[in-house]
Length: 353
Image (cartoon, rainbow, N blue to C red):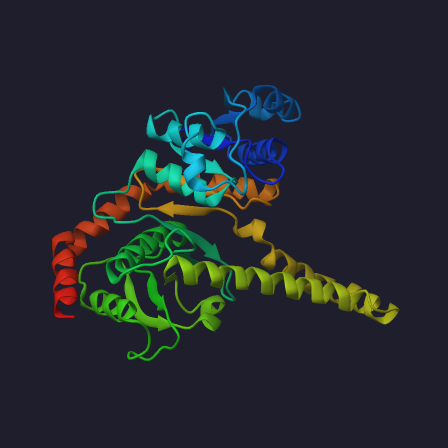
């Protein structure tokens, strides 16, 4: 795999340089064609690189000792976009010094910097945060938006559906991913006006590389009965946090149950293969790497608490999107829909109300 190099914000995340460099090194071992631009404090990065000699020759360091704080407001972070490791990693994508950027830092700041530097694609009003959510089936489900936009109209939701389907075609290889809108019920009469309008537009659309299958309720997100779930960022972020919390609850419940008595410990030894499989499936590091879709460039958000394995997975997500040219795929799908037709349809519905 020959790709443009990937800019890594080495200062982001809960543990910063050590884990970010270790994650890049792991990704490099898996794919020896990967090249990196490591952005952050040179001395700290060089210290970390000393433990990963295989990464040294594949990396360039861009020195920067200014870091975006985890609790820093996006408006404050934007003022230091030219001096922080996060801002410089995104700026490298803008100016062609890197093909993609990966950061485990402040999500709001990363979105603000990415949107300002890279701008949204023609035909896209707002970028959306998309991630892979584990399911009972062999394939994860693509879900968006997970927090970039608190309020969305029907037009935004239709655009999210197009972007999510393009992402699903890349990661799963489907020709026409099954798309559903997150709603409080599956009946056609349920939901807000925005959801109703978006459903009508997706039903009427022709030529798109997706299959619209109506609505899905939150308790079915992990069933694997669809390939893409679309929602606004407010609802999506709540759903994501609920899923993550439920996964931790199940893990902790099993740990407490198996350590409660000698008989439980024996039972754990007997059932260990099954519990290890469950632990692997629930481990967020195995699904790490949320993507800002709809920008003129690839930016991937790693979870702040991700391990080196999680960071490596985020890097691989960025590489996959570069290899399959996600931006061009979204542009082609928008052209199939007909941007003018979507705009006129939305305006007509608004006027009717």
